Length: 160
Image 1 (cartoon, rainbow, N blue to C red):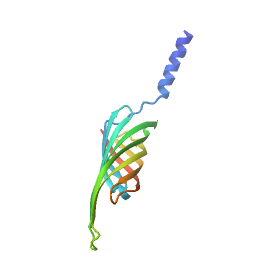
Image 2 (image 1 turned 90 degrees about the horizontal axis):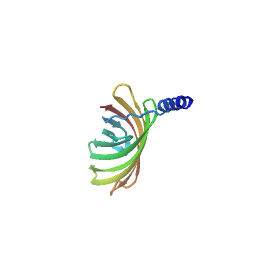
Image 3 (image 1 turned 180 degrees about the horizontal axis):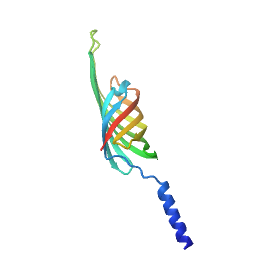
């Protein structure tokens, strides 16, 4: 009887200490960054099962002398910290294109590919809203985009 009691106590303790993480099946929103991340990106996340998900981001930038877009895909692993807080890390890549025209004849176009890493923290509210802050280093391969770009962004997403 004593062994059964201890086994039951162990099972209850293990259940209460192991927090099941819950990531939303889908999340869509904005990733607000800057620099070479092309500013604001439309962001979509899709759970792949367990603690894995895929994130796809489409960013674009347009001005008087330039136009461009950038598409990124990141595979992410998500780990629960505590009560709605998760941290995540991932790897992926993407492609982009931009054109720059100025009045001095220094016009150029570039299509490039890049590889990227991603690490961040997120909080899921009791309502279907998630906020995240992440850091994404990217290495580009193109004529004019062949360097390391560091992108920090705030994400605001609706979960469903």
